[in-house]
Length: 272
Image (cartoon, rainbow, N blue to C red; front, side):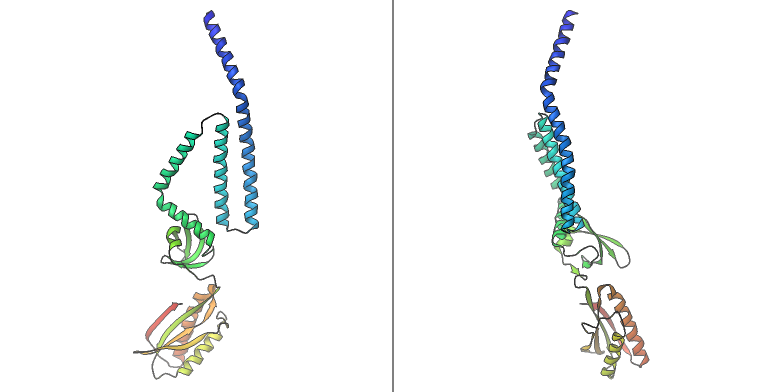
């Protein structure tokens, strides 16, 4: 019984000694953890304010803030366990090996990630722009890190991978703010060209959505086998483009019917 009491007493003394020796490390580690958590919050707040003042893209701002937040948290964690006396070299090696494994398994996602970064930094388009890319035409709703969300004209939501998007051709219809339509139709050879041109110009000038500068153009583009091919080229704001094309075609057909002018079996509309 005496031996047991002595053993317990010695064990208790050793425990107290270890505790006293270890307590400064533990207390300093806790202080570092508390100060680090508050410091990370302050740093993130300052960085976000700087990015807002510099008017960075919201997607880029959020992404950079998240990257900075996680990097600081990982650094704080490594510092915390190192202060506790835990060896960090093995932890760093495990973290590096895990990062390599994840990178190899997510090569496609990393390509999309890199594409997203390129789009966010070089800004070939912004949220709200109307673009054509990868066989898709629509309005950019959201630029995410891996995909870009596009809303088509019939309200379909399309997600295009950023890797393919950044490496392909992109037509941005919103950068200039205006678009020119190229509406073509064919009339018979015996038609009075001047009458047709003046009638169409009257139609275009009476349409408030057609811009006066640059001036709309009505011209002959080809003498085809089935007749004279005419081109009507009105300018409009980007948001009015579809309405201008539709109303111009309808007005031309009504005007030709009114004047007894037959449109030959050819009608094509495309934009340049």
